Image (tube, rainbow, N blue to C red):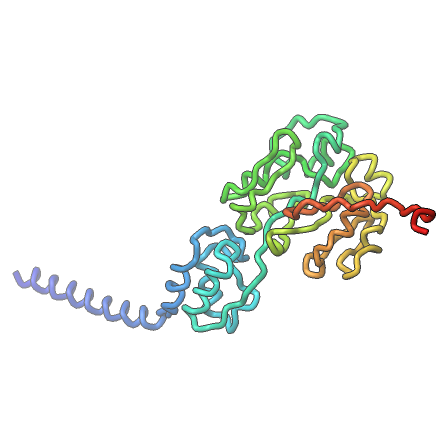
Length: 288
């Protein structure tokens, strides 16, 4: 009887000592987590798309709480409305950013860019890009195998079976950037959405010289520089035989669209152009 009692007392004593040790260890290595992190996470869209540059909404919430300002921190899915709620939760000033949207900078459809060979391999742009330049003479254009479509979690991008090119659904696009990362040819770009969703951009990434680019694709940018000369806002630069329009400097005047000889510059969501009225010359004799 005494042996059993002693054993029970010893085990109880050991348990108590272990509990005390564990308590002090827990207090020593206790990690304090700001409760505002949970508040911020609650207002985020929970998309966990990585468009903010962090590994999920929780990591983004932690970064917002720990940051001195919200400069450089933005949730593309939630937009300015969500960021205003985030700022209110942590007592900081909201940073208003221009909304962005994905644009496809390639117009090399089957009609504009004829095939010169046939790819017979894994249905993946990443795999195809690692093996060769593509099924056409343009080694810069869209491969058409749909890695961007698979990467989009918002059903905002689909491959057009006729043109073989990706198309963006402006109503669903959240500018998360997943399609941009998925494209091995870098033909998809996040650009400023623009007033009334109007945008002007060069739908080409071909850096070959003009004659070579034009031979490979009828609507390729040939780097002629006409758009750069006509732009009054210094929004267009020519580098490596390719024109690029700065969305920040562009004032949407559309003069560059008119002078582009290949139609490589695209204008989206603009009203139809008014036809220029032709005034008949006045007969000088009748006038007199």
